[in-house]
Amino acid sequence: MHQPVKKVVIAGGGTAGWMAAAAVGKVLGKTLDITLVESDEIGTVGVGEATIPTILTLHEVLKIKEQDFLTAVQGTFKLGISFENWRDVGEDYIHSFGFTGKDHWAAGFQHFWLKGQQLGMVKEYGEYCAEWLAAKQNRFAVLPNLTLNYAYHFDSSLYAKFLRGIAEENGVVRREGKIAEVRQNPFNGYISELQLSDGAVIEGDFFIDCTGFRGLLIEQALSAGYDDWTHWLPSDRAVAVQTESVGPPIPYTRAIAHESGWQWRIPLQHRVGNGLVFSSKFWSEDEATEKLLSNVQGAQITDPRVIRFQTGTRRAHWKKNCVAMGLSSGFMEPLESTSIHLIQRSVIRLLQMFPHDGVRTPDVNEFNQQMQFEMDNIRDFIILHYHVTNRRDTPFWRHCASMEIPDSLKHRIELFKQSGRVFKVPTELFGENSWVQVMLGQGLVPEQYHPIVDMMSQEELKSFLEGIKGSVGNMVAQLPEHQQFINHYCSIPTSAVPQSRSA
Ligand SMILES: Cc1cc2nc3c(=O)[nH]c(=O)nc-3n(C[C@H](O)[C@H](O)[C@H](O)COP(=O)(O)OP(=O)(O)OC[C@H]3O[C@@H](n4cnc5c(N)ncnc54)[C@H](O)[C@@H]3O)c2cc1C
Image 1 (cartoon, rainbow, N blue to C red):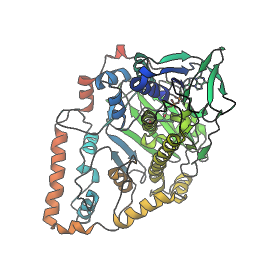
Image 2: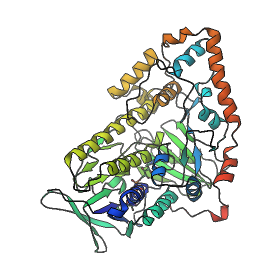
Image 3: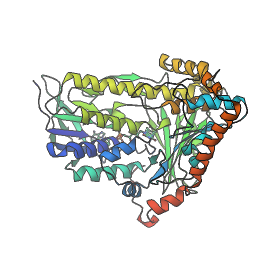
Image 4: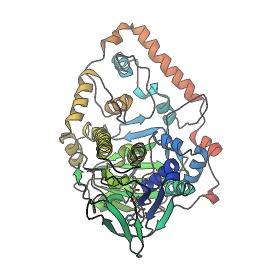
């Protein structure tokens, strides 16, 4: 028998918990009784500050006013990610959020650029993309007649606080307390209530597990299982530290590869978030911490903190009357800033398949299939950065270059290498232009371009390429500096900067 869902309990109040609370509250709050339990004693993971453009969709659902949001979270704009030392030491490229050049329906812009390159007409692939050029020139604006594809950098604890405001406005009740026991119905194994360590009991019809890596409900109670992907993505540790800003924030995230890992630098209005992701097989925690601290700019605001993780995915994201979101559902390292996106996808999916009259198996199966498909595609995209590289300078990079990779990724690499072609699987996150930017950026050179390019004479090709480059240049020249735009759009005086509680 199906039990209608009236009471929803969200376990955990990190980014995942409050995203779920804000969205479920906003969309279905009037029909549900929603409680969120979080424990100040346990705290949140305290990282996760770079996003991708899909976050704007969630903010539209939540009717968030961008200026208010950016002011509250000390946010900056992000046009892409700069990958430094990935193809080889001393070589950089940017994976931008924009479109590059102009495609022909039969052949992507990369084919035109490849011929241009063979003829010595072009330099960087990104020069034909406004977001790439704006990032390079440190410019940004949100203008009515000029649309850039962008995302945000924000302070994660301020973001959770901001979302909490929206959730509470929509009737979500916050309960501070430590969950001591997850109780299940002895007949069907459904979760029935959470027992808190202060003795209180929180009953629910449906539970959202946002308890972080521990997966208190989905794993510890429901034993959903976990697929380990460490053999494809070897990093299993991060060390994080916050520093003072030493200059105006740049409109992109930096991902700087080192000998056995890579370092992120996320510029916010009031500070910089830094961290180093690494594999414990190749670096000790002390070595990684030393590497990070010798590569940050600005005075340290926090002590370095090591975070351990296992890359992989929960075998079921939705099991019985529980959906896992955020770190409890699995984790892929933050190289392409995809975790917050995945939380958002889980929230939107749950809202689309909300079990108001009881949990039904087809919904559960559909939800799990869609999550898995999306995670597999993101996984392949991240592996690409490690595997396709000219770096052979350390055991870590030699390992990455020679490791086995999924067949799905092998196919994409071979397709691009032999023909310059890339095809997006419908509903996958990363589009053709992302794959092309990263494959070229990592040093993969296609053996040929599409013959349709030869329909243009060399003069026509030159004028086609120069025309795009010229209009991209003119468009970006109209933009103010990133900092100047922030000052005008969403900054607050330093004395009024809200206190972050993340470490
Ligand atoms: C090193 C690193 C860098 C990252 N960088 C990015 C990035 O740049 N971009 C991105 O999109 N994502 C990033 N992520 C992922 C991102 O941080 C997470 O997806 C996001 O913060 C969501 O975390 P969470 O809410 O699932 O878990 P957490 O933040 O760990 O929150 C867990 C919550 O559960 C509560 N809880 C746990 N146990 C109990 C209990 N027994 N009783 C009561 N409450 C309990 C805690 O109090 C807390 O509120 C990164 C992750 C890591 C590890």
